[in-house]
Image 1 (cartoon, one colour):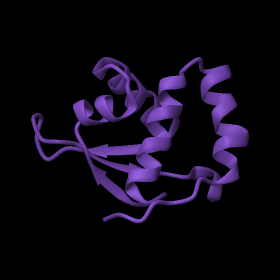
Image 2 (image 1 turned 60 degrees about the vertical axis):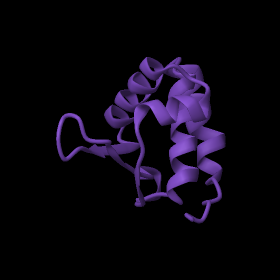
Image 3 (image 1 turned 90 degrees about the vertical axis):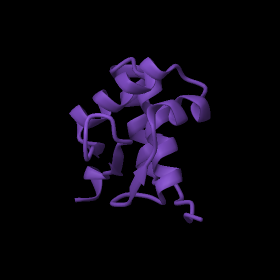
Length: 98
């Protein structure tokens, strides 16, 4: 079992208002927090399908896809796939720590 990582203050104080208020993407915040918790924190990888993320967050699959795309664009998540049909491997990033 993966050890849950505590959220950085930055996530609640800065990232949440940025993603929800400025970007108008609350689903991105929800997906980021879910990936952070389930992976064990920044720099850790998590292999999880979009469908599983949708079920576990209560979002639609298309909302999860859009959220992942937005998080990748903003530099908060990196995603790899071994093939088009493979379950993606997401790496949670914390660029504010650099």
